[in-house]
Length: 116
Image 1 (cartoon, rainbow, N blue to C red):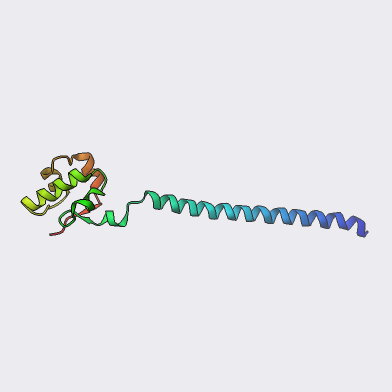
Image 2: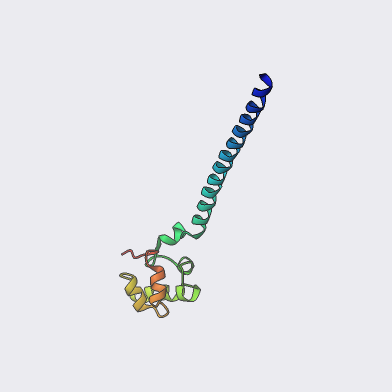
């Protein structure tokens, strides 16, 4: 009777080990997916500094880091601000600075603030 019980016990042990291995692999996959998702989200999220650029106080290098704004356009923004004063809003900025069209203004929406 002990010989017939032994294969059943060994089979149960193998099934339990296999089930535990599968559960462990699923947990590892879930963990790696979370880590990868976090790294991808961080890579494509805007920088905190970019979200707080004040168009009425920032210098050209900070403005040049915004999407669609390079060094030349950033310098134009600073020069226009020094000549005619602070910008009221994004529409005012776009109307006063050549090179900021609808596409660039759309990219800047939510990334630029306008202090007084």
